[in-house]
Length: 429
Image 1 (cartoon, rainbow, N blue to C red):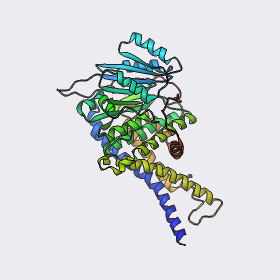
Image 2: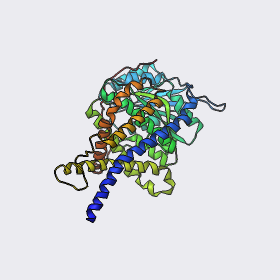
Image 3: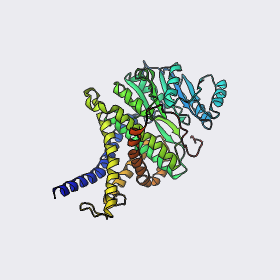
Image 4: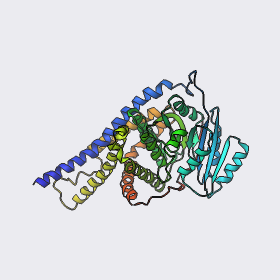
């Protein structure tokens, strides 16, 4: 009898955790993001570039672009980088042992563009070492790193550098990536996801103290800070998450700048999306194991909230799987405290509440990022599919990532050409 009561208590505790945890986090993200907007965005809503003070000047910037098999995207990406409005900059393209015509394209572009430098690594070394190679030859202190398929906004660099000039404790400024390919259902959903999940969470995390990760596709760095922490880790599956934690553990500040825009391509096939999200999840697990000890270090209290959130998110994923398995067994074997008619995956009152909270979150994020990305409203309809498609995807990648990281051998993380969906030209006003 006692064991039955105990199991009954555990079951309802799991159900409560599965329901209230995402509801609580969604509310927290919305509140934090709105606070961030009124404090850090609304006052500069009419500014094209940030205004400088009397004793300030625009210091030089090196734009680093690591490339691996970017023959299709190199010309467009480099052209956008060379056309930024910033007064003093250089562009450094790093060919990381590409097997296509990337090197040839970069060399030809450099012949006609004195601001473009090309670094060639004969063998594929991975993005981390590619960025390090670019940083070592960069002549400026501020580094703006973008991916080989990214189209940088012409005023992106101004908004990033502002933080470095005014705040010497700032080591990195992560930008605001926007989705270019929006023709398929997966593409349309990712437009909303990058606002409500990526953009909103970064706003909220910055409001509450620290950021979990910069965006690997667009981040500015202070070279001295990156050098201090030993540059990017070559064995990290997600070098962006790893460098973020290394910098913050060393006392540096990391910020989010929503006006630092870059336009990117994302996977539009299920297999490509699965590989990308699994790599992200595995990178998060790697960081969790690598930095778990911060919970026992009084001088690292500023990172406790991020670590607890990461652990709870992993626990939530496994709790969801456990509840589903127990419910599935109850269909064949009666379990006193489980009602087979109450499926954890079919809509009921609690799931409707969660979906409603999700749609409110999307609406708020649309309002926030709509200041920089026109046309978000027409993608709102498609976001009703997000809880069904992406929650399940993120759930299974989170569950899969933990054992894969535990069983994987340590080694250098090298490039794998990703699925980037349908290539589309960026339409500009």
